[in-house]
Length: 186
Image 1 (cartoon, rainbow, N blue to C red):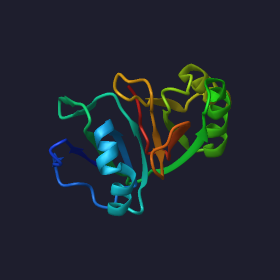
Image 2: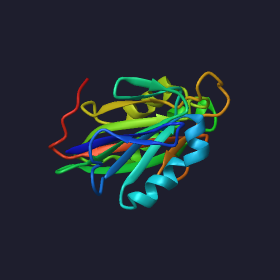
Image 3: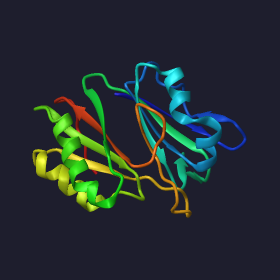
Image 4: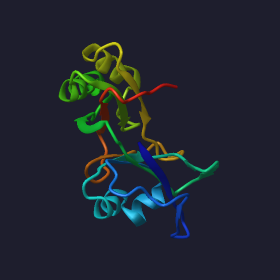
């Protein structure tokens, strides 16, 4: 696996700690309100990395290299040597939809060599406990589930998720990692 991190700030500057990974399989991003408006993260990354799955969400503070900023963007570009990546999305327009959305994501991406599921979901419409329960009901016990809920700083008005398309409200995205070479923990 190869990865690199990128950051964009209000000064309209990109900051790459190292040379960005060429031809990534996955771009995972977190964007503050200003970055979402000025940069439109999915379009930016899709133009640069058309083969990559691009998944991200709005955030309440972005962390890069030990610094926390608001209204910026951070991204990780990842290329896997021996693993596969798939993504899926499910509607979560209201909190009661959360368990069903977890079931839907699990069934859509379930394959025998599934190792890790990373879920990003709309922070205003998703009940995280119910979503994880829905995933657990359909996934094997040894599959690691991780992720989080999108935020919008302290506003609690408009959270968004992107899954191979522009940011939008009312959805959950799952990134699934497959293959015997995957090792994950916490």
